[in-house]
Length: 557
Image (tube, rainbow, N blue to C red; front, side, top):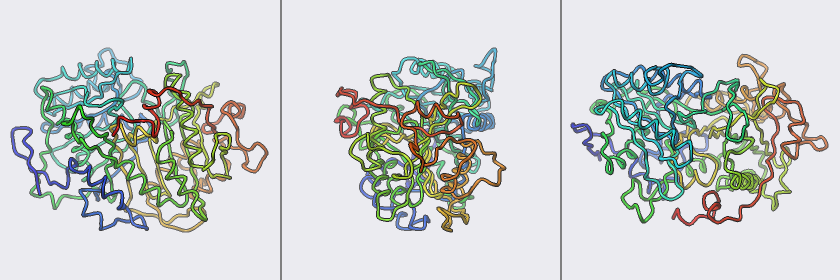
């Protein structure tokens, strides 16, 4: 069945299968019983009965760190023409965001190297612009975002609408990071999804030389990941924005969301961009009793469903890059998979060494991180947590090497790669909030282009996208050049081998793994080094625990 939308004065028919609005119940009651991939990580025909659980024929390119993402986005915005559109959703924005690094300008509002100037150029070319930002209450962040919305909204009263999204319920935030560049020719349209907002401190290069000072006076670089998608998944990503915008449109005097002008009569013969299967995953909290008309009132848990399916297929390794690594259902799922009979599954984590939350919640954040490790290892107390070969859990932090202080690089990415076959990249953190109460957007990627490889010395077939992304990230973190042919392709061999860019004591030695962050800092400073969790304290404050903890929340039902 098709539905017809009246948005821009004309009728546009869009296939029901490409819309996401009715997907909540489908995911909740059915899709978690299905699988995006069969036992060989290929497509399962049974899922075609569900409402657009995945799309095929996509091209996906990884954009590692802010320099790659923002320069690619900058060119895409400047390329738009009359009839095209630019849709942007984010958690935080900054009106002085340069898309080409640390560029100075006398007038960033006009200079197209800056976000606002680039959007102004797009509007002058005849494109429509919509910006949807979370109405952030955090001091500083909220003010910057509000200022950005005001200056962008003033660009044009006929082509631009920018607004703050206040549709969140208690403790919920709109955390999606999404840009859709809609071109009149569908094959040229693209969407960006990942961990990066167009905010004040997101720009950094792969060498992490950026020096940014946070509220606590620490200096660090910024590591993050975004992907740019072309193909049928772009339409689902458009639909995600359109659903949220329709909710705002219902309550505010804003311009309607642009509807793609692609020729739906020839949709069946549209060209394929690539060979990647992409599953658009979301978290949307159920609406409270006070907002029954909110979009998707029953919510959606497809991020949790999608990751659950992938984790249950893990055999060799699970690699996570994570800003917040807190106790949630994912810890149970990973722990269960690791403790199966004859399992050799390894958990490898690159994570933020510190925490930027206020001090009273910050200590509890470290407690929740310890709880995550405790659940994964299946031990009863924090004192029993042990990293290394015994439980096959290997956590690391990233540190700068371009200065004498060796400050920690802030790891903001939200990434999971499993067995060089599956990759999930988006806005959802490994915590209870992202699994249940935030508005999140993640893409799960299974590449139809495969390669012969080895996993733990066993010959096997893997997916090229996941394998190449994991290889690229590990080279970056370990300081290995991209053309170094001696770097192993087998991830377990990488884990067991010494490299110049890693500080890892032999797992068989006495006191093999540092027991505190401070012990790790006494060793030679490298780009990547062993990291053990800072001490954490249980938060004896009900309101605070309700913001962060599993089983401590009552408002999400």
